Image (cartoon, rainbow, N blue to C red; front, top):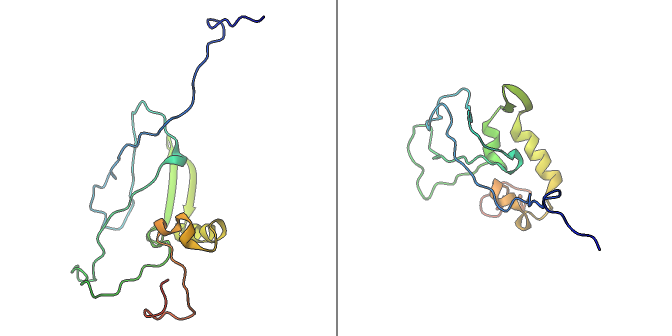
Length: 146
């Protein structure tokens, strides 16, 4: 009969039960209307990060060219995966070393989404990413939901 010696072979539980998300603001502050670089820096933190479980939350207000609000009756259309088309380049860096860089993220993630997700968008997560498939061959508002 084998005897377990816990002092020599301790049993440890290394499973992650849940993630704790922290909020970080861009260095430029909340007003991102001025074109240029948007940088989010996490410095001098004694934390472990899991980048594949991270996300960016983009919030804003859609306005007309003259900065006035749209009326309820106005028809507004964003392209599929529209938020990603707002950026020309996205970089991920650790200790000033570039880990990954992606030019034209709108185009790249649209191609990835078309290949990755099922043809029926209503049965996948793509609705969370502003995807809605065109359902006719016309761009008419009356008969095309996409």
